[in-house]
Image 1 (cartoon, rainbow, N blue to C red):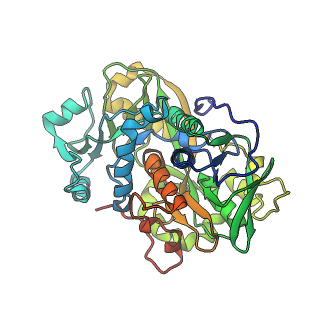
Image 2 (spheres, rainbow, N blue to C red):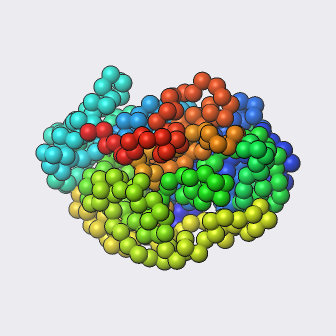
Length: 443
């Protein structure tokens, strides 16, 4: 069953000789950064090795959420929530954004306590967040037959359509003057005395003063070739969508057993609420100590396995010249197989919780590789040793909803204007300056 198909995007045909900024990666982070920069009058080239939104930016759940985020991400997500409602008008295209609310379910007293403790992170922010149960819960989730006794309700949260949003943002960036090329991998940076003077693409060199690396799951490999240590691994998440359903919930729901959100076509996107697959690869051992706190914290939700990804990544070049064909050209789009076990379990739990789903069928399933960091928050940072390079990656499964805010912060760093939020928590140097690096659940 093929994966999701983003809105077709017709790229520009010619490669500019010179621009102010090259953005590497056509996911929602790169597209949002390109839009922000182009609106500020900066000349931009967005280069994507495959297709716009071909990987995780079209494969995620489509949630636009503040709820249950790492507290360090909350200010940036608030910025994103200010951007999303006006984004359609700004770019002149639909993204599918709807502020429909999200509920986070508690399966027991301990979980309820965790939700209540996380709620303190948004005290005074006027989000409308609250715990709900009883008749209010039944009203928000009509027809539900779950075992949930209470949930954290985030009325400001919502959803958008991953297959629509990133191509629409990229088109908006082009309307503002950005050049956008697909099937055009950036092979390497052109550095002179530690300063960026351009990039080498598979179609030739482009002169520029600054580069944004927003390559998602590929960012570590690209950075490594430039001599930059970027600790990042990949986690596989399995997702499905149903045919249209009448009388289903308007608000999205996360629970231990399943997560569900309504789609613009009337169907539902459904996934496991807790299970992800982690394929062991050579980087698993290179980065074992840095990721150990995260693995210890998340071991219940990770299914470790040895698969074909070990062989694929072990065979990848880790160093190359600008004249070499790179791993980015050998694999244009990461399209991993979904886990059939995860699909079966999530569908069984979802149909039990919402009997209306029995009238529907699964019409598509897919998987995506999520770029994760040791503390499960992104890197949005200038690189101290490479003048002109900004990295925006490692969003750890939280990137779609926060994308427009992350694009704005990235553009702030590139243009060296006052940042929309304090970027200190997202600095690359936190992995080398002795900081305590680990995920923060907020409770």
